[in-house]
Image 1 (cartoon, rainbow, N blue to C red):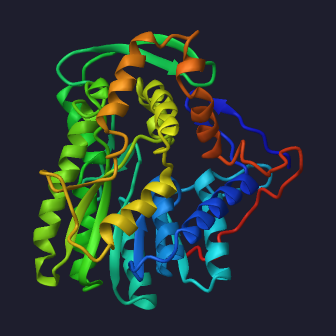
Image 2: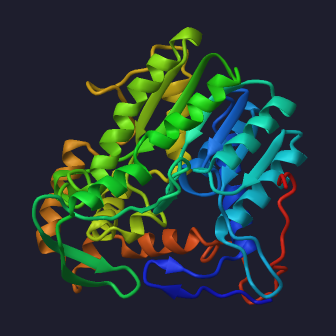
Amino acid sequence: MIIEPRTRGFICLTAHPKGCEQNVINQINYIKSKGSINGPKNVLVIGASTGFGLASRITSAFGSNASTIGVFLEKPPKPSRPASPGWYNTAAFEKEAQEAGLYAKSINGDAFSNEIKEQTIELIKKDLGQIDLVIYSLASPVRVHPETGVKHKSSLKPIGGSYTNKTVDFHTGDISQISIEPATEEDIENTVTVMGGEDWKFWIDALQKENLLSPEAKTVAYSYIGPKLTEPVYRKGTIGRAKDDLEATAFDITKSLSAINGNAYVSVNKALVTQASSAIPVIPLYISLLYKIMKENNVHEGCIEQMQRLFADRLYNNQEIKTDDKGRIRVDDWEMREDIQAKIKELWDSATTETLGTIGDLEGYSNDFFNLFGFKVDGIDYTQEVNEVVEIPGLQS
């Protein structure tokens, strides 16, 4: 079939298998170009099919020749119905990994559930024995708690009062004012339950109980802080509370791993276009200004560049891992440079529908958004028919 992008708000309802495949190949080629990393050998990536999770899996495999198991929840294809982009990403990754002689298998299901944890544990026991790196990169808006069966939904709201600021419709470039009502206590609790650290701890506890973590194993989860500009809706809002919980959990996990000299870290990454960030009011406008400035200063990075720098310069550089005063690894350091943030603050006040095309990089934002779904990828002829039914070679049933 010929597959075209169909959007609804900040969601694209279709994905292109060839575009997703080329995206993955481009990331693999970048990692290869940077040389080998003396990194992990057996890696579990929870949330492995898009964004930082996918980039972590690619970096592990093609930077360190690691065996990888990926866990995710993606929609498989049917005739005349394309899969979700993470399905195609994983199919392309596993194809390339197997051709390179690398072990790569995947489990498609609800990573919050006990059943998927048990299935993953059995696969590790059978094939790998022990894991030396666990990446936790889930970005689901909903979690069914495995013990209570209650469905919790996260929300993106300020705490303590309503919030009004500029935002942009990145499809049209129209800048408008948006107001967000404050969160209730229930909103906060639900968001922490979905996006906090509890499930990360559940995973590590389950692996440790079965002796599946190797001596000095590491586990890393991903977070974001951002500037004061976005604080009310992000870091000091409901999602920020969840990130606070995630970061506190890292210390709890490190204590629990003391017997094997293991460590848990939170890596604070830069703002990037993801399916999740596109849904957060104000963030698309901030990112469009950020992209413009960082590109002008030659410090712009995408997911794969961030993960390569995290692995090569922070996690596996044969030196003590440097963290901030709250124990976090900071690879948002280039975004948070004083000169970068000062320029964004200056441009924010002058950002209008008429000026954004000059002072921001809305085109770059839009291209990155569509790239997530395999569209607007260089080298792909979108007028050609493609086979939408693509299998993942190492998918476990």
